[in-house]
Image (cartoon, rainbow, N blue to C red; front, side):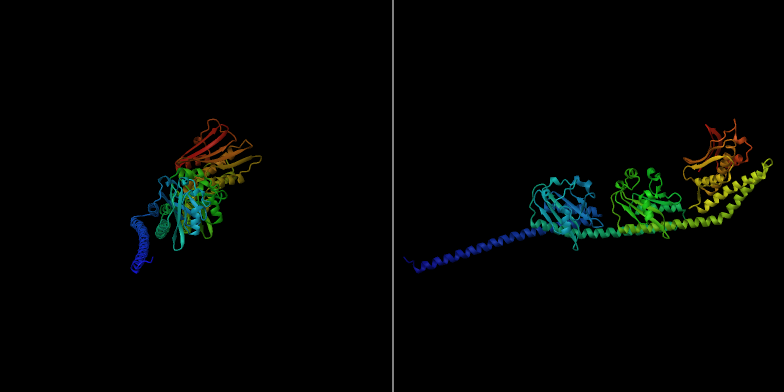
Amino acid sequence: MRLPLKELLLGEAHSDVARLLQKREAELEDARIRIRQLESALDARAAETAALRRIGEAMGHVISTEEMLRLVADVGRQVTGTESSLIYLFNDTRDELILRAVTDEDLGDVVGKIRVKIGEGITGIVARDKEHIAIAAEAWHDERFRFFPGLHEDRFQSLLCVPLIWRSEVIGVINVRTRAPRDYTKTQVQLLAAIASQVAGAIETSRMASSVEKRTSHLSTVAEVSRTITSNLYLDEILQLAVAATAQTMNFKIVALLLLDPDKNELVLKATQSNSRDYVKKPNLPLGESIAGRALTEGRTITVLDVKRTSEYRYPEIAKREGLTSLACVPLTVRERVIGVLNCYTEKLHVFTEDEIAVLTTLGNQVAVAIENSKLMVKGALLQEMHHRVKNNLQTIASLLRLQTRYAADRSPVEVLNESISRVMAVAAVHDLLAREDLDTISVRKIANSIVTTTQQSFTLPGKHITMRVEGPELLLGSNKANSVALILNELVQNAAEHGFEHASAGSILVRIREDGERCRLEVRNDGDPLPPGFDPRKSSSLGLQIVESLARGDLNGDFTLASEGSETVAVVAFPR
């Protein structure tokens, strides 16, 4: 049956309306979805803006890069709704990432100790490829994963790593983690990436500011040391102030200056700001058995990351007790000649930058010039005063010769002249050493060696076999005391050789040098003929012993004894330094 036309028209109209309503409903749903997307994007943008605003506001109050990194790690954890955040930054040589900040309170002791090479583990791969990596669950099963002890990585399921990029260069990586599995959304990744991008710029700005500050400090150090070494102070004071200024302005734990002793091929400590008795009393360093010796012989700066773990470092136990870690050993060079080294220690692991090494090299060269200038000044002053000293010593010799005439009645002229010559040679030895020493001080051991050598060459009796040697530390004295010591040692060695072996045909003479606190002790021992019973040197008619007694008490303000000890005859002169 056919429907009336009116009904057909009404049916078609209802159908068109239904289709139109469906279309409008679909459009409305699309609009709702779009609104939700826009709202989500707006929420993400708002979260990003809030995070960046928080970082920006806080950075105005942050005074160090470390504080800023801790703040960024905390913000990154909060905006991603994660439970842990870590930040790694490249070292100065850009071959390793170093853990610089964590939000986990129980991980504070590993900051600065965890190091990741480029391409090593997920963090190293993100740094290499400049692309983020997100793992939803069981991150430790990923073939790219590498376990680092101390990070408690087995506690966390998910991992999101995002590179910190500044001007197309990766400067570090930020990681966030959760204990439960987590699918990281595109929005979360974008949000963390946006924060990373902004923070990278702030980090680089902070680094540049820190670099400028360090350079300023380094220049201040150079200027301060320059003022010090051109001052009218004594060399010891100049060296002491130089190492103190270097340690303070460059934040070194210990700075030590060692100079070369060419006679012994050893490095001798001359100045340090350290108060450690263990460090100051370390033995001298042989050139061929130490890092400092290698720096001197090779003429280049040598750096060590951790001296406690370096077999070439001779005193790891002292380094452990004193908290010494990294070392820069800088040669002191003047006129293409290396005269010593400057050792700079840090308390924590530290990679010395090219700028730091350049500053230390400049300081080392300045100090080397100061040392050489001081030597020239001292020798110049000595030349000006030499005629006074020669005059005084000639007067001393004249007095000795006058005394000699009183004791020459029963002796041959040759014997008297030989004794006088030996005394003149003792004084000459002091002058010879004074002309060759670094400073206005003379080594007693060198004086003793010179006198022993002269005695062995000049004292030759037929059938006598006497060995002579010197032992003891390098005891330094001023030139005035050195003259008296030289005359005393000459008399005692000559006396031991002449009277100690008048009947004995063989034996030995030992000159022993000792330091007892603030007093010096000189011993001349021989195992030849014993002293006569009841012998008293103060009642002896020997001119030599009277000279020793007079010089020991008058010039040195000390004491002189001569007595038997077992099978040996021992002459002792003790005096304050």
